[in-house]
Length: 99
Image 1 (spheres, rainbow, N blue to C red):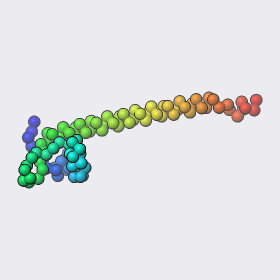
Image 2: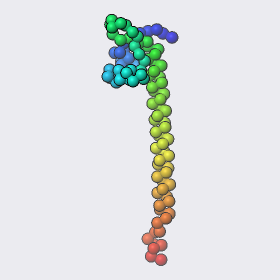
Image 3: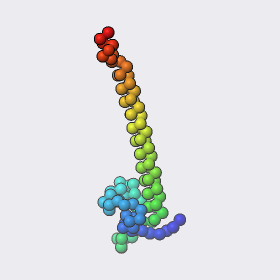
Image 4: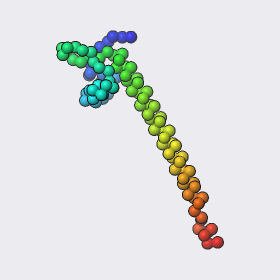
């Protein structure tokens, strides 16, 4: 494990292309790693490993949400197809009505 410290700008440039306000909103909500306490001296610094782990989890969760959404969309499409098929079997055709 490296103990490299990185700044917010490095996080944005190298790890997570998100705005400063987005990152701090995630931090405030408790979803982003906290920076080290520098007692107000200098910029906020994060341990690179903590940020890397957070990014890896963020990507994994995003992929799982996308797969879940794709599966739900596929189920919905199949359900619509079944409803359409049932409707087409229930309605008599124009030739059947004439007979």
